[in-house]
Amino acid sequence: MIEPKSLLAQFLTSSGLRAFRHGIANFSGRLRGKSRRAECYLRIDDPYSYLLVQLAPKIMAVCKLDLEPVVISEPRQDCYPEEKMLFDYAINDAKNLAEIYHLNYQTRSGFSDQEKENGSAHLLNASLDKDCWPQLQQVFLAYWSKSIMQIEKFKTADNPNKQLGNNNQRLKKRGHYLSATIYYAGEWYWGLDRLAYLEQRLSGRKTHFNHDERYWLMGSAGSGQGKQLDFYFSFRSPYSYILLERLFKWVDHYAVDLQIKPVLPMVMRGLKVPRVKRTYIVLDSKREADRHGVSFGKISDPVGLGVERALAIYPLAEKKGLARNYLLSVTRGVWSEGKNIAKDRDLRCVCERAGLAWIDCLSALQDRSWQQWAEENRQELYALGCWGVPSLKMGDQVVWGQDRLWVLDKYISTNISQAME
Image 1 (cartoon, rainbow, N blue to C red):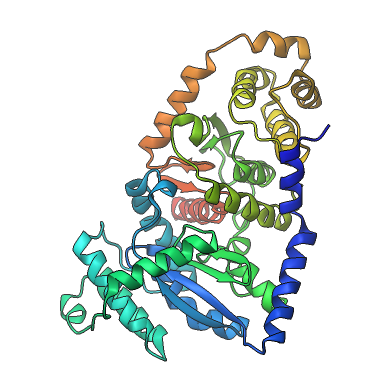
Image 2 (cartoon, rainbow, N blue to C red):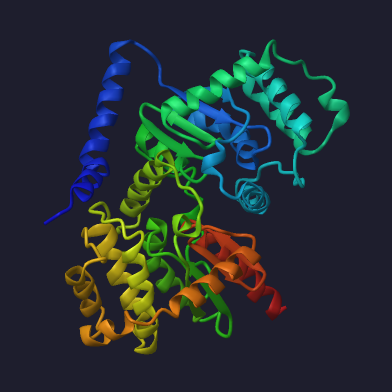
């Protein structure tokens, strides 16, 4: 029997429901005679907002869209369990994005409370200008480059705290929590990474913003031989599941030594994942899964006992040389088939499909050593400056997310080229 939660997830992530929502939004807009209008949420201390504001004119031109800037201040604290680590990671991640889009980018170590307050007030004032985007770009550039002389020239909006409070509530009522997001007719598009979906929805094409597809396996086969790739993975992470097949193909192409390092999910490590965040992640995962041809939507959340049992059996799969089969089988069961791996029947199904004997799995379930090595993997992950999964490390390059293989593509190609010179 399919669990009620699995049926609900199936419905919410169905392509039919998404198409219906898009159709209703388009029809409603035509009925009211309104132009295509989207909201773009920006925050002065967010590096992804810094990049997105520079691409705004191109987004409007490509998608034939009016883009309204909405300036917010503080992020939702319950959605950012490791805010300082996120900022530090985002600084370097945004640098990679800026390079491939040829955008201006100045790194900095952080923002004081006064800088955030003043910067937000200056952005609010700039957003009132009819031709606001060049003004917004100037404000971001001045603050990120710490140009005091330029900052002193900006005007401050009247009663900025009230406006920021209203905008923060606006984002919350819309059902989201991230800055550097675009909201259009019921759907969210984060940063530069999801612009291809907006373009495809409004123009039928996906040619201007698909940076991750441009850099797929661009290096020569076997060129990573002798190198190690550490892969931090969680059975409760839909993005980890979506990445698996591409990652295995990537590893085989470059002949890289893959070290899989499972960790406990965030909520089992004491970190909060509020409902608004879980909902967005599931909907976004469905889009990404569809794009990569991965089945997704019939979900049985393995948090708790399901995850513990999956971790307990993992060393057995690794010892038998079936680690890849095991990860693929278990995660497909959880995220695509509604398998409740807290129950013997479903766990047995995914284990035997991976090539494991159930009698061996029953024995492995009695071993609690996974608690120690999963914690050691978590500590390693934090030492790298990451806390979420999937995270990947090769040499001194660390990336987070199933949509960051292109960074490793560039890294391995650059390092191989330099080694041959």
